[in-house]
Picture (cartoon, rainbow, N blue to C red):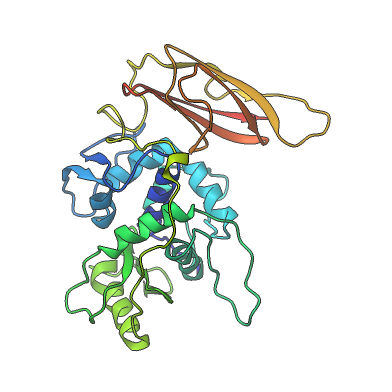
Length: 342
């Protein structure tokens, strides 16, 4: 059945943020009341923690840091990245992905969540449940580096009360109205996904992933036997990636660029449709330009653009469709533009 996944997609948001060079496990973020173009999410317990690290934000499942990062990456990027890996998100007819996506504002299935956490547990490529030897093909959702970092964060989750013994990496989620409780976790060899709720979607008072699904998850691992996770082997080529920011966003005030930012896009413009022709089709070149200084980091659909640091313009090749460009300076200025290519 297609149900709201609650907060179980948050690891994917932080993984994409790591891949984009925006955050690392120790990057500082603010958990404080904030409005995202009128959307004002709260935390599950209606409390705020102030300055936290990315690791703390994910382990505590805080909503504001996750929404701040998703606002910079773009909900469409999360939607497309998950779909490319075979993890389907079902939106209401005629609607586009919004920030609510990161808090359960779309439907998915228990099997697809298991596949997503299979990606986090290994090299970033989803492992879809199947019968027999033929494994369904899928594209990576995260890099192996980002998957390893997120797995290490989830390794630090404390077990629920009265849970069976055994340390596993896991995340819980609770959908709006207490209709769905989730817990998905993994050890070195297994992924287990648990859903608790009523088939007709009727709310269950006080139902949560922490109190209802997580104990079942630990009991399942106790029955199959926990295989301790090993530290990843091999050298990580961190020099090939841009350094993450010590604080995100770099200047206080929210996920969107501040109105007083000196950076502005001269081309393309916000909401524009860029029409380009190329005889052989495929990818099309586009020269993006900014005003107000050079950018230390260019992001194309949430991913860093190689060779564009310290420049006011960048040559980009894009597929047709919707895109997001983001630029950030070392001083903390940033700007973002969303547009389409035809």
